[in-house]
Image (cartoon, rainbow, N blue to C red; front, side):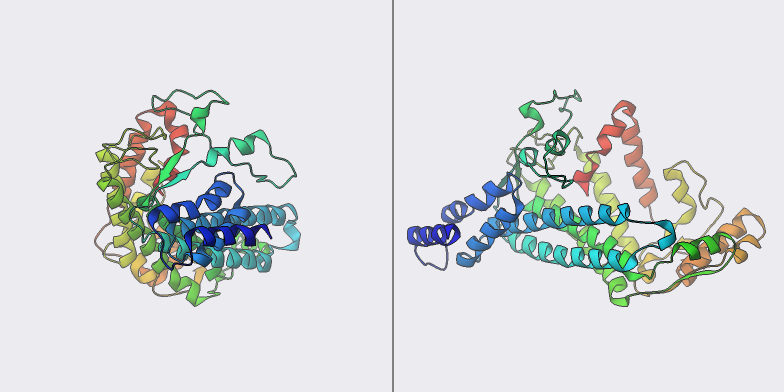
Length: 400
């Protein structure tokens, strides 16, 4: 009744026009925005649908509908995943049927989220106040809202790297999200869908098969869904392209108010991670590296992988992984420990393992990607301030 009444009042005030002014659209979106910034995702979702029923071009409502759907979906995924893990018994086997059903449902909802965000991105002037620090959500579903849940999205350090006192309003700032942030969110969704479709692509082994492989038996992991596998390339490229688009918008911004990700000239932001020209260039380099890997223009030199963690992984191998071809050709993963063990010397064993896993897509010659070099630059920048390294990592999520 209340929904119908509120809808009637809005129509009465603005009339039944098919188009609304920006000011009218902002007024229409006030209720969904208020619910969203309190963490009432279902109410925000419902009221967004109300607004879109009378104004199908309201970018704010699409944005709120997409984000509300996203947080509801991820919350549900987390709760059900922990429920499955609590009931897991090693001798009962991994409940793949339930896991696949949960991930399929989640991925389907993320597709709807992406569509909402894409419609919202049509408005180049969108500006949405965002206050996740004030959300009151029972994330662990135990019937009460605990302090750690109210502090989940707090900013813990100021720009001078000083810890902000608990209870301070400075821990709960207001961000102002714009079109660049919408593309950032679209990229995040795309990367998450890539991971989910990878999991859904294969019929993963049970515990017994893993134990038998450890004892020398050949393990085969067959393709479960070719369509899921082939979709990974599309989602990866969407993720990279949307992040590059977000960068483009960030760098073109001239305003300076509660920036989610600031450009080098903006000063009013809240994350203790300096976004200077060097960070932007490293960020862009890595995105281009990923794009070239996905398109098959470059290959990943496997002997460089270990340098990221100072562990000697594949250090003797001299080949490249051709991800471009790999992502276009669904294949069964086969691991035969005997073939690897019978190889003579570290180099031969490493080459044998890579050939077993990647097949013909592990190649001897290819244009080498610089992605490891660029990732090492980012790692070294973090390590330049060792006391803040752990805390900085909490904010890397801002960069997708």
